[in-house]
Amino acid sequence: MDLTTRYSLNGVVPSIVRQPQRVEEVAETLREAARSGWAVVPWGSGAHQGIGHVPPRYDLALDLTRLSRILRHRPANLTIRVEAGIRLADLNTMLAEHGQWLPLDPPFGDQATIGGILATGLSGPLRARYGSARDLLIGIRVALADGTLIQGGGEVVKNVAGYDLPKLFHGALGTLGVIVEAAFKLWPRPKAEATWVFSFPRVEDALPLTLGMLRHPGFPLAVEVMNVRAWEILREQIELPTDPGARVWVLVRAGGWPAQVERVGRDAAAAASGAQVKDRLTEETASALWARIPSLAIPPNPTPRETLGVRLGLLPSQLAEGAAVLEALEEIPALWRAHGTLGLIYAEGHGPLETLLPWAQELRSFALAHGGHFMILGGPEGIKQTLGLWAPLRPEVEVMRRIKAQLDPEGRLNPGRLGWA
Image (cartoon, one colour):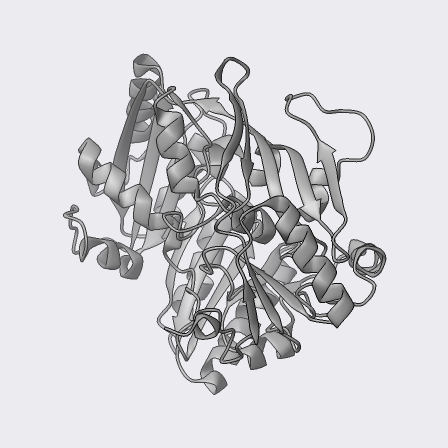
């Protein structure tokens, strides 16, 4: 395969591909791009490149996957510093030898690199317990558009002095600088884990369980809710319980000391009084399940034609209302799942543009009417242009524009990805 074809964005291919092996080579490549006026798209695994607008200019693909070293691991301090091109899966395999992990589970996590996870700001079900990558990030090193290397934070958990530079680049989609290194606080791996599954005839019947887990003293690792379409996709790959009368399935994942795990299970079963299925999954089944769930309802890159993925941010108590709206829009038989204790709903629809657009408009209007937010995770560029990537547009957007103008005045890093140069 031609290297430039591998780095295609919506059919647009770069004329140049660089694969630096050292941070200094990244800086030099960016200096060369500045001299030549090239527009640069940073690239990791490519799994999340469908997020954001397609850049109108795209000359150079900057592949960071050869920057994959672990620079410093301090097991006693529960901290680590790595290069941005390392895959999360490879990092956690190494950390497992020390009984530790970086508890992130973004979409397509078997492929995702640390730099890509930070740049997109995507998270998975474990966010309910550990927060996002932003919450675990304690230090960062970035190459700016002119090749200048800057650093913020450090390798200790308590970094409290000065501006919080690491957070600036989280979720910026590579528009402010190229992340080349990152430092994180780690967590011990749970001594025990277990997953329980419950089925319900209606979403509202699941609310006592999901809201009961919200402030449970056992701190569940994740509480995931999904509709029948999502469950059936998982059943095609994994042997899972069935229930012909189920409209919604809830998974509760607990981790910690054995007694803590068992308490979560007992209390979850007690709160799920309306459940038709109450089952504890085997360790093997649970592991396979949680590896697949984060990618459900998240369009891959490249996004298939006539596919749209969105995220709604609501209050956990509004989950049933959001699900009801999704199920009522019968023109698009949506696949959806939600973080039950966070109120984040991920939905994927398939259909022609003239049907997907009103579907997305309805969901956007619902989220805004309920004081929530709406984001397009992947889909046709025409819908992104019509609706915008997210809503509502908050006041800090203007601050973001000014920061972009300061750090990348020529607009050469992922130009237009966020909707402006």
